[in-house]
Length: 285
Ligand code: AMP
Image (cartoon, rainbow, N blue to C red):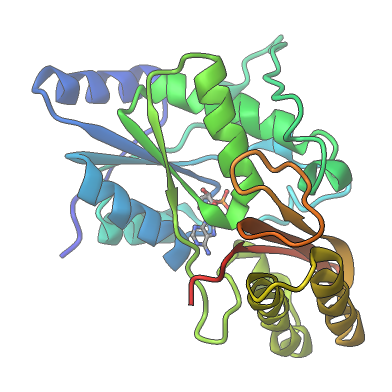
């Protein structure tokens, strides 16, 4: 049974709802999204529901985090469908501001997390993490949740958000949510909809290749060899690899040689679509 989902569009209305819950000693968890809701988002909402009395989901396609040649205009939008799915997963309030509510005339502030934003996705998407950090800082300050949940699908983003919350003393606990995958291993993503039928058939290799590398690292193979083999397998299948790296799972510091614990992170293009994925070392299963 779906819960009833109220939609608010202003920060004032959002704050009033959350203040009322907090006034009754009820806890609030937030799940920020850009819409195009799929089971990955829904699992974060379900996880949030298990951790707090109320779940606030947000939908805002944030222009600041898209580069000039990226898919901001094409990004899939459909609020009625999204709201129904979020309600089904257990959200009790949807915050869906328009861009004027988020970025008023003369908006001039940027949140920049140094260091861990520089490599990986930060290298090929230069202003992306400033856009993410700015909008997430705003959403957390607008809502004031006790907990906020972000997917491990965007692993670098999750660590950047943990860092910014610590650095700015934002009083919220950041929790990571496990990656939800298709049965063939492809991580769910709104951007999977851009894949042609052929590309969709090839796409699961992205996860297979890093999972294989994770097994190899856990068995003692050095990072360089395991990653070289994964890169070769991806390129042979038609991927254009943007990055493929083993990093420290907490700090994202680069790793080389033999490693006992790591995160393997990859971004690769299939045609025009850029897919990302990551797995832990040792592998989960
Ligand atoms: P997005 O709408 O793509 O910005 O994603 C909103 C949130 O959902 C982010 O915290 C993502 O990391 C998370 N997310 C996206 N895809 C998945 C997935 N397949 N499994 C788990 N979480 C996901």
